[in-house]
Length: 410
Image (cartoon, rainbow, N blue to C red):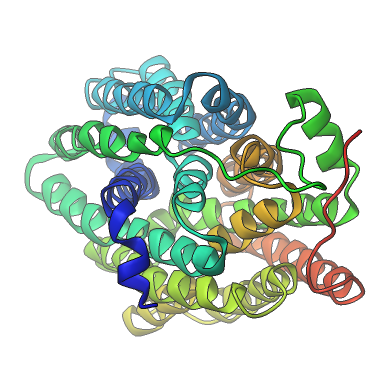
C-alpha cells in the first residue's frame, strides 16, 4: 500500500507535530546568532550567555522524562500547548533583557522547560503512535526531516533582522514565529483520540512509571545508547552556540553563520529521511554509532583547516546530514525495546544524558574560550569523546542481536 495512503488518516497530526518540532528546534538552534550583539549591548560575558543556554539544555533534559510521564496521565495536547506558551514567554523575556537574570530565566529556564514539552521526544512519540509499525521508522525520519526546516528559515530571518534593526527586533521576530506553535500543538494533540495498540505479552505497556524506569535501566542496549548519547548533545550544542562566534573571530562575513545554520537545516532534512529509511532496514544502534564517528571526523577536518566561506558551508552540509538523523533512530529503538505507552518518558531518560552533553558543549566551550582565548581545546575534546562514544556504540550493537531485546516486567 502506498505510504501516503497509509498516512492519510493521521496527516493533520503528523503535520502539526512537524511544525511544532521545526519551530521549537529551529528557533532554539539559531539563538547563537545573537551571542555577540546581545553580550556587548547588555554587558555580559560570552560564558554568561552560554551558561543560560546550558541551563536551557539541563532544564530540557531533566524535565523531559517528567513531561513524557505527564502525557500518559493528561494526554499530549495540554502538555504541548503549555510548552508553546512557555516558549513565547521565554523569547519575549530575552528580547526585553537588560541583564543576565532575564536571559537566564527566559532563554534558560522557560525555553528549556518548553522544549521538554514540544521538541523531539514528544513530537516523535506522537508520530510513532499515529502510524503502523511497518512504516514507523520511515515516518519518524519524515517528521524529523520536516522538523529540520526550522533552522533553514529562522537563522537567515534572525540574522537579517539582527543586522538591519538590532538583536532585540531579531528576537521579537522569533516571538512572532513561535506563536505558530500553538495551533500546531493543537492539531498534533489529536493523537490523544487514537487508542494505543493492545500490548504484546512481553511489552511494558501495563507497567507503572517506576517499573518502566527500572526496565529501561536494566536493559544493557538502552544504557549504552544513553551513555553514547552524551557526545551527541555536546557536539551539536557546541556548534549551534559557538560557531557564529568562531566565524566572527576568523573575520568572516556575519551572514555566513546564518547561512551555515541554514545549510545545516537543509541537509538535516535529507539526513533525517535517509536515517529514518535506513533504520527500517538495519540495526538502529549501530547506525547511531556511525553518526557519532562521522561527525567527529568532520569536526576534526573543519577545525584543523583555516576557515573559509566554502569550507564552512561544506562543513554545514556534512554536519546537517548527520544532525537529526539520530532522532528517528533513538525513537525507533526505544519503541522497539519498550513499546509506545512509556516511549516519551523512556526516551526522555536517554535524553537527560544528551542534555548533560549539551551543557558541557555550551558552557564548557564558553569557559574554555574565556580561559584560553580560542576554541582549539574545546573542539579537540569534542572530537576525542565523539570517536570514543561512537566506536563503543557500534561495537556493542554489533555484538547484540539486530533487534534490541524487549524486557519482561512482572
